[in-house]
Length: 66
Image (cartoon, rainbow, N blue to C red; front, side, top):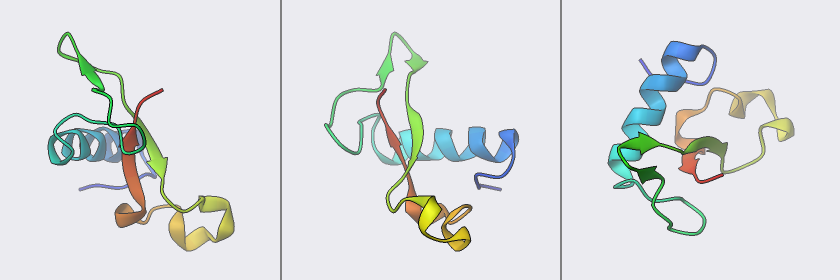
């Protein structure tokens, strides 16, 4: 299960997004997996403050570098 509401769901989502993006940041395309360590952060494409519906909306979440 993927999502943003629990640590387990976040971890699963982060792993899936790193695999789907081939380990690249959604903004600058830098590698986020360095020395086998995932340095990526989950980011909302559309800011979640705009509506509660976007809080756990998986298609709105991607992976980005720090």
